[in-house]
Image (cartoon, rainbow, N blue to C red; front, side, top):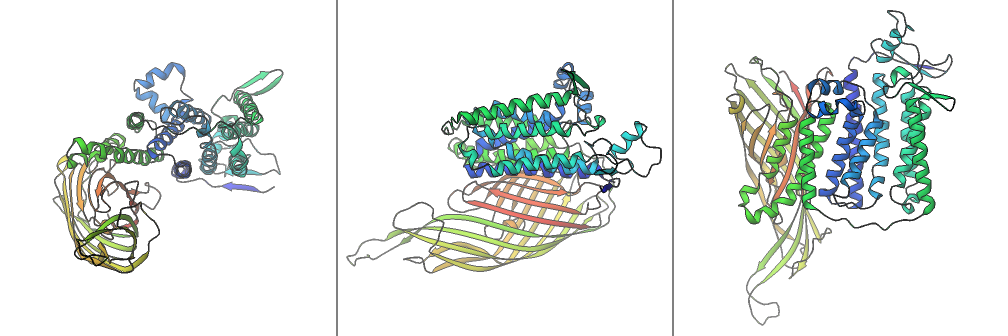
Length: 635
């Protein structure tokens, strides 16, 4: 059989964390897609998904914490937290913790019965399969030395199997590579992916099973499959219960006995439920607003407390993005209520205030300040943007009468929708002067199209209709010019940017003609100002107000924003920003938004690249999306 040789991975930790980020992204994405298909309210489903994800992350580490040290960990003992953060992990603990989190919170969030458990089975299997790629690249979870002529993987110097074999006396000093080992990571990948395919193939039959059956089936197969793979695992690569135990004359590892008993028990429970064929009716969801808000605040506090001690950067990023969605959903629900008791301007920054606590709590300590040389840098940005918003329009037709008998005017009602898609690029020159002030000058060109559809309702208002009677198309062009400067230091850092948008920016007002809306008069906008003002610590926390900031907030719908942001402990352009956006449309102009500028970790050779996503929505009829790729030349 051929042998696969994996050379030493220069950035093993980075590739493992990249696979970890992909695994959590897949896990969360599949869960959110399931909630969307089932029509779950976001205020209930998002906190449950976030709690299950946080429990999955923590359980992988806390399963190794001795009972006597739990109190010390809860008190914030730095030594215990450091040992956990840099210690081994086991997905078995994460799966149990995730299950407990769902069982504890599902009823409080309005989910009755056991059917909600089935949603977590498939995503967990596919996430574990993705994580196995990282394990294979780094070399963890390796197998025993492969027999001659059998399939095996050989790892290079510096990898975990190489060092373990040297410690066991199996390798001489200076060996070119480790002895071939059984590719248990590959077997585990096939196991998890295979179970995911089985669940997908049984999805129609499983619809008639009692709630929770699919989850029991998946977990039983995972346990029994892992039991078999343990026969090929190197005991040095199994950190959990790796000591042998003899029962009834059979010697197995303690982890194998646990997996065997647990797998058989879960499989028996699944068979019993399916054999009974007692399918409980799907209970309606009950919305408990105070429980939903309480869970969201609890998750926020837990993530802030653990962000700097136990969680890895991919885990922190995943939770931050999830909590941003939770906070946006809560703010979307709370703002209309608060508007009755508070002035409107006082309720606008609610999402930004809550999100700022998250950013400050999970941000790392700022890096030591270093004097920056006055060398200029050039940043090239390119990307795509989309703007979708709908509105209800009333048109008053004055004078005359429809039947010729005289009389006053009348009001016509329309449903309108606007769809904008554009792409382009910006170029920004930035220079740090001798006095430490930053100055930037730039411009860009964005080109796209706006489609405006109209549906004539008649003389009484009606529900929103997706299919329009007519659609008009217009070409969009944005010539973008701006200038910015920064002054001050630490918490008194002030930054501003001023600019203009010139061209065909969009049809912000729309006036259908009387009748079936076969023609229309549109008000085209050819000029829009840009302004941005930021005050605060650029690395920790700052407040920002902007109007028409970037093409994504000028094309199709002019948008103003107020937000809090953080540089996440850095002052090199990376940041996370979230808050309230206002763009006039069908009557409720408020949106929550989140944006970020994410740089690749040092050592990858791609630190000049950054990804800049932006998402704003009211979870109803207005959404703004953009994604940019930035390439930086110079410092």
